[in-house]
Amino acid sequence: MDEWTDPLYVLSQVEHMLAATRAELLPRFSAAAAAVLPHRAAAMETGDCSRIPIKVHGDPVITAAVTSAELQRLAALGVPGQAVVTEETLGGKRRKLVVLTSAPVIGKGAMIALVPTEDAPADNALEIAAKLWGIVSVSAAQRATDPEPEIIASNLAAATARAQTITDLGQTHATTLASLLAVLRSRQLGDAAARQTATDLAAAALVELRSVADRDQELSAEPASAAFDTLAAQLDPLVRHNDMTVDLAGPDDDRPLPQDIAHTARTVTRGLVLAALERGSSRVRASWLIDGGGLRITVRDDGPDVARAVPSPGLTERITPLDGRWEVDAVPGWGATITAILPLGVAETPELRPLDRLNSRELEVLAGIALGKRNRQIAEELQLTEHTVKFHVRKILGKLEVTSRGEAAVLARELRLAPVSA
Image 1 (tube, rainbow, N blue to C red):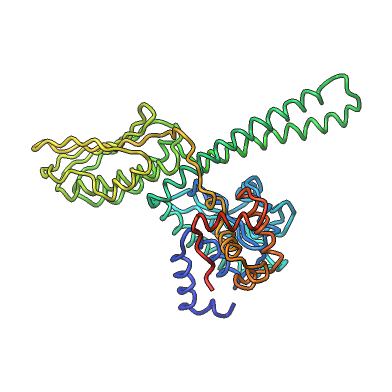
Image 2 (tube, rainbow, N blue to C red; image 1 turned 30 degrees about the vertical axis):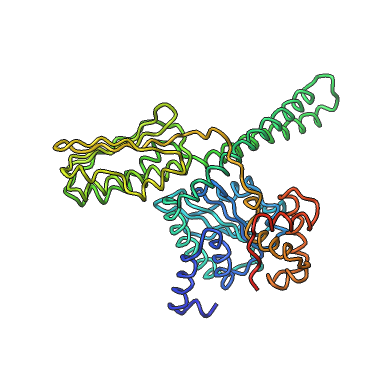
């Protein structure tokens, strides 16, 4: 705790967290926060990642049972910029929790719930943890606005598969609960009090089921008009501090855009507007239009150098994973009109590779299995308990749909899984 009074130490910790990859972000934050706020587990929900909006770290007994409904209730208790100490359910059990939430200018913000090892965390520890989470959230939101092409492709596959699964589950449970309600409401049954109680419970379950589906929609998409408003806020400094006139025409449409489409559309629009500025344009008009199952992003300018009015390779890399295409109309003396067309639907659910079902820790354990190592050896190399390794092995077998360590090892070798570093 004393080292947190040293400015250089604080800056080094912030630098270490900001340099983290997506997969390392939660573990690094957890490690840094543990120095001031010791905790057993951490569960994070972010609105800027459509592939894996929920991430967990720490004690597998807790993290393996965390649900989106639990995190949704916790997010409602949070106060951006502050640490809220509460007692709520996480991982299927009521616990003392510290809830940290953020509301950055860009992005939908994020929430993290920590399970502290102390009954009464110190006020200064809570304040430091809240400030750290605010910094991490801003960085994560900034990176989410410009995802790499391979991340976009992976996000689309996982988001589509998750949406289909939730739809199937929703229909199954809704049918079951509706049947239960019909039986419980029957006048042929006795014990009115019991019937009323059961009816209330089933009705509440239906409401919660619908809220989970609504929450998944919220995490995976955003209204087109709101997405364009975010773009307008991002372009505002350029509009206010430049001689070039920028006219913005939003879609005037509240149909949901998948988050990866929205992120890419903003990146493409900003890139085309900046390119027009570099070509000496004095007036630019940027517009979005949802038409025929696609989003049309059009940027028109009056720049004289129409020979350079071509999309940059970087922008082409952005739209390629989404099956996007360009339309370019450039006329000397009149300017250029560049349109990017992004399809909004996915014809088929892309099949995820078997290893994509595993998280980073499970991949490390699988790599050890592939080398013929026993649980004790893997535990020593990864600095885990043997019990935790056994837990991961069970999860790996289930996710890979195999029945033995040998089958998992063969699959890992066939897919060229990298070995665990010594």
